[in-house]
Length: 321
Image (cartoon, rainbow, N blue to C red):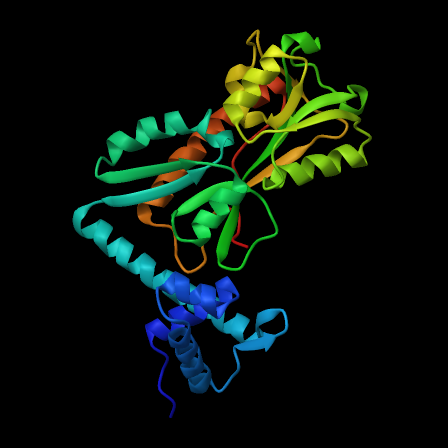
């Protein structure tokens, strides 16, 4: 009878699946390439199946390899979760919690979420990173973050995701643009637009471009800017505009320097997901923090519903995908 794969061998298989390369897997696991190859070969011998195939384009995971990967990350996640639950029950919550958030969430929802979370769990050492989707996704894959919130995307090997929030996008401009605050607008009637857009590494950029092309929105000039504070200050001073989720601008409604207009006919929607490493489950501390954040998102959604007549409520029970 073949010996059962060891945990180290399973971790090597997971690394190759997620990295798509024996070399990158070795770098990630701080091992040699030959060592990773030996671990993979041992698992394949134990199972009597090929998990990977070499092609001119590189390493390809076989159907059997993909199935084995899904079972393995699930099993490791359960082990990780069991340890966290026991530690929490034994001595309360402590340790480090690493979170990645986009400006969409740090500008309006983060401060009130921290206000309630920090006093309740003083032994949790929080490390928060603000960034855009490409950076945060790479950090989660590298296990540098426990979780991140990013725009919904097709998914990548090595990640789990669940839908957190579906929001309506709005048009933001300064007084010089001359738009009436809170008036619903068809973007096709507002062109030609001089618009600030996120960089191409941001998933929202593609969605905005598809919407403009599909619905006849005329663009005169574009500026790429992945700097939220600078974007808002620039449009407040000029006749340029930008498009952002309603969540981020809830505190700008009614202010003189920023004009907020709902986009209609059709609406432009943004979806955001929580992403975590596939081989891990959310820690108790991470789940509690997300619960706090979701309460704040729900409160903001009610404000948006009242002021702009639409909802940005969190999706509480989205499935992993």
